[in-house]
Amino acid sequence: LRVTQCTSFSKPLVDIVFSELAFLSLETNGLASVITPDTYKTNFEYTARGVNTAAIIEKELFACGRNRISSYDSPLMLINSKSGETIVVPDSSDVIFDMKYDR
Image (tube, rainbow, N blue to C red; front, side, top):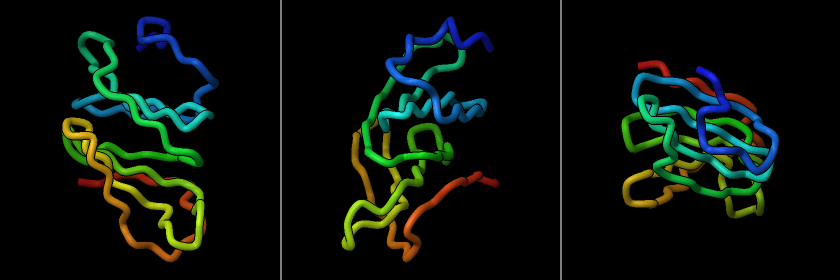
């Protein structure tokens, strides 16, 4: 993969997650982008402050780990890239630094 073929990034990259389903880029400004591997087109973008890791779960579902923003938030979120729905998954951690999805 040559990253220059993808949509240009507005901020430095925190991470790029690769799978046969999609590429998922994370920028320092919290922007997560789902990129189609065969066309290098951005299909979905979502911005969440504090996101520092992600994992692709299914074709249209990915998980993000982030800093806990308030005492009511969880650092773990599921995001559906087709509907845009976000689900906060209860977790008592303050920060999720890294995650990997293992089928």
